[in-house]
Length: 308
Length: 289
Image 1 (cartoon, rainbow over the protein chains, first blue to last red):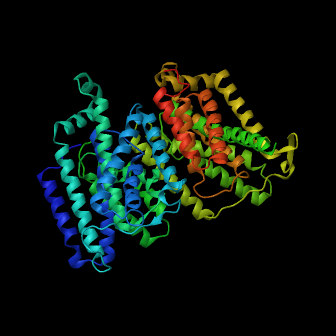
Image 2 (spheres, each protein chain N blue to C red):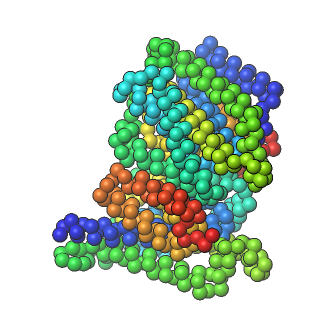
């Protein structure tokens, strides 16, 4: 994975400006759609720490995303009524903590076994919310949004949520851009390139992988938290492995070769899904076709870069 | 006494469920062991087998035709999938394999929705087996479930004989343990791959056809089986038929008894068992490594 250069960052900044200007020209519906894409981008970007960063493919990632979403339900208005100042750090701690615990176990395995272990642990989190009354049941629950400092009304809601999501994604991207430049980030890229060499050079490969898994999980929790805040709805579906696969798709679609790839992938997939919904009833046909095309034809993703 | 009879019934159900899981996961473990391909769409093949049984049973009125049809159809379909698609993905990264097979799940589900519908269907138990067998002290057990048990055991036995005793079987074992060996021995690896994939598909579809009268036939019915059979493969050790057999029975029993007595913890219990095994033996209980 290469870090996005000055030109790439300028393009991203222009894109962010375009999204930020949406309240001036777009309908509330399209602003909600943009919020969906921004949240998908956060989720995919958090996964990029693993896929593009260390070269790990995890199917547990949606579990951490869902934990972040459910922390809004568990601490927010119907239950405890805490504000975002509490629910967001709580989401980070909960998802990061779960990622630390699951990663410590799953990283004992490699390759196929790692994939299967993450699949099973992710489903375990899914069952926790699907089969027990902890999360309000198998069908999901509507929640009231926790106070975010601005009083939301029907009129200003799409605008405020859009800007909050844009700000969160920007902060997350900047943090990761910085993180991947530190010694820690470089070491992760080194593991992806040649794990044995990094170990031979005295790096604690297992510890670094676990740290990356935890950071990725915590950031997925942020994405899930923002999803719950935006949609005011949580369901066990958020934790299911299909959603992990979808995040992997966004990463692959955007390109695992560049840090900003998943952002492009998330916007592209959201647009394709929206177009698919308008054109046909057959959502899965559209998504399956996109995946096949991405896997068979688009080997380097939208962002390019020789990441493979 | 009723509690004991209930427990006995659940244990038999667990064994029968475990044997169905074995049919699915033995294909999965061999496909990965021999070809190095992760097939997340394996659960969809189970779903296709069940729907095939539903269609054949409602057209002909008999389930018996569905069993050979599932096997034959599975062999053909599997060979086609391997030759057309999976062959190209053997050397690709896990990410590509995961996404390709995820796409297949979506496409299979959509094809099912387009060809049939999104409803739940029940498939009647064949008339000859529509009775209960008295076991002990007034406790009776469904004859069809016993038949499934016997058929699965028969298939498992045949498979072990084939893999352990025949020449092709030993080539498959060689391929599962050391893929480069097969080339050295002058065996056509491509044909072994097609054979293994076709057999795995047929087993999954047969399991689906057998399971159709036991549970409703419904969209996404393969998903639960997919997760459980992957857990079976992880616990049993990759490429190990014996490992798949014993861990399938174990998982079948835990899941069935768990669902019967502590429904809220069944899903978690199975995953927790896997976590323990991974901690203790990261390559599975039956792997030689």
